Length: 638
Image (cartoon, rainbow, N blue to C red; front, side):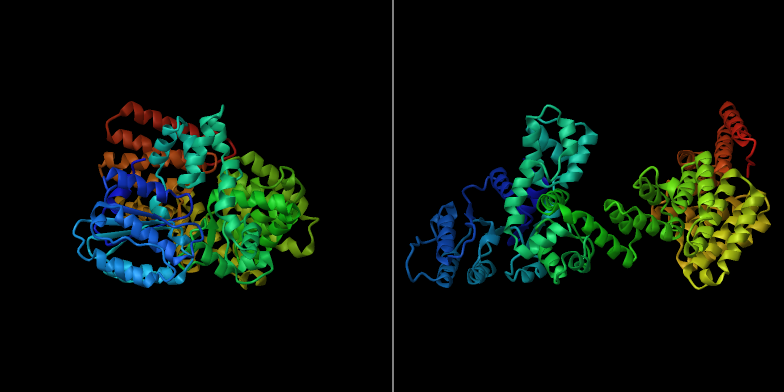
């Protein structure tokens, strides 16, 4: 394939180019196709280092022969023959002397440089690279970086570096590669295959070879993984079997993790030095990727992880459950609740998973992770909430977030019924759960007195000794204040709402609860717009910016900010600018979860259509608001 974006970088004027990437990244194919496309066949000396090469003489003979086969080098480089006393240092000096008059641009390409096992030979090569004449360009292809003193060239701007991320195929290139093999996939399936291979050239090529003769290409592509035979054989031979027993053990016993750290690896292997092993693997481009600048967390390439998991199940199937349990407790002990719950579920330790999720639910919910909670609850057996009062309470809150009032009420009844028989040590937390869920239920019903009552109860709970001594007390106090403000807003008592919202937003900001701050800001904006379109829009934009920063742009609360912005711009006589915000409000509103928001979004649409002079469309929107306001007799609109 012609990869012009990489060809341009290879042809740049830097004296040395390093291509460093994992096996199967397409380094050799890239360099050969670049030489062909650029017409460099007669001016490029190609040296392929033999596997495990430790003979300096053999390496230097191959370098000299390759240079002599180029047109410019044929006239300059003297013939070199094997001899018992042939010294690599002398050869490097001789080549430098021979090449000194070189005037025509010539390339020395050394492929598989990582196979050069002699430190002394690498130092000799460094001498040649650093002192080569300006007309000689050196390209080094390797699976991992080697110590060649290239940092000096980097500082001088004389080093071009192509790494794994650069060689990774784009989605368009992946499509082209598959098409060249006669494989045509639908976009969703192609996207899945691309994500799984992470643009790895060999993975895509192996997939293309397998797909070309497959009857159901879409199904095969969707299931393509590290356990697929051709991929597994390649990764086994090129990566896993090259590692020491210590490294293989670490890779296998950590393969079921989405991310791994050195201390966690040590816990799972019962050894030490995990951090060093992971760093070395990442430096060696062995399908291990650092996730942060400090290199404290790593992950495995998706296909490599699939292979490792298959090997673990094959070689030690009895350990899989125990490893998940150990990982769950480690993550829980280090404050990573979501991963702790997932590994407990993978171990089918439902009691541990349920206790972890229940204990940390307030923090997850108040942190704006309702979608994550929904996913974790889906990981339990369908019968679990009915058998566990605490899970039933969480399921009630989840159903409210999904807009299912009847299911929420059913689960809440199960939770209240089961709470009476709970162990004494967990009853206090259970009562707090029921209070929070009761508050959410009252809001969805539009029952303003009940919202106020439940919020007051939460305020009292926040003052209890156990809560007051922990961060939970401030969380509950913030939640209560903001909901008191929302209730006052719903009753159109704006002067009563403002102090609660102001205190709640300030407290949320102080304790680091951006989701509560975001929720409070949306209602502050909705109040402000009734007095000043400009100030209302400004407060609405603050809420939207916070939502964008944390990924809450599709949350129901965001719809209120969008409505506010749309309404403010409409009121300022700027309907064209208002339209995108109203559309976003319509996309994100969940009328069943927030009845009042459903009414308001229709009303804002009606005002916008009136401003445009579209009377019929405005009337249709106002009628929709009216229907939404009265669609259920037990709800009030606010």
